[in-house]
Amino acid sequence: MFVQEEGFFKLWQGLTPAFYRHIVYTGGRMGSYEYIRENILGKKEDGSFPLWKAVICGMAAGGLGQFFASPTDLVKVQMQTEGRRRLEGKSPRVKSASNAFKKILQQGGIRGLWKGWVPNVQRAALVNLGDLTTYDTVKHFVLNNTNLKDSWLVHSMGSGCAGLIAALLSTPADVVKTRIMNQPTDSHGRGLLYKSSIDCLLQAYKNEGFFALYKGFIPTWARMAPWSLTFWLSYEQIRKMMGVNSF
Image (cartoon, rainbow, N blue to C red; front, side, top):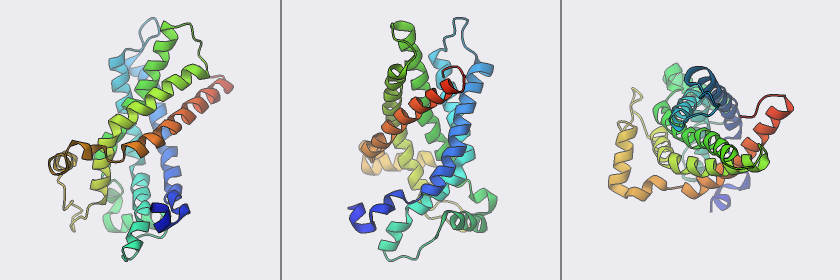
């Protein structure tokens, strides 16, 4: 239906800001996780990293990475909604990533670039609780409790679990984030539909039921699973080629 209405290449609407976002977001979350793990929380003497520390580490790293990447995420969301607006006969709001960025600055200033950053950060914390924490925990659990060596097989097992858990944890936050970022605002930038992310969550549950929070779960998982597999296998191989210890 989407392809028929808007065309095949509209599936890649917002690719440029998405690319910028991942540079900032991925660099921030990966660097933060390892720094917190190695220098702040620390591993045990035997080299293991307790689950409770991995949970804190994953959520903190994800939140930090997303906070700095929030402006690019806002631009991406606005560009991805343009096709639907045009089909509804509405005038386009933005023409390109740079145009969207300029308009956000003109209308809301620097602060406007962080519109919706709270649900954004909340979602990223949950995503990385599922991704970073799960991958790190599953990988080292397998290495410590089986005869398998640190190889692509173990990396695949960890990434498979990470993609599933990340999708399960992030979908409700993703629903809330999208609704808040796309809601109309008053002259002061305050949302007209929801007071906060909690208010949005409660309204969705009350008016539409529990499963409304999991709208889009299948496509979310379909996106996260191959992304997680591709990312972790590539990341581990790049570290190995550069002579850096395995994650």
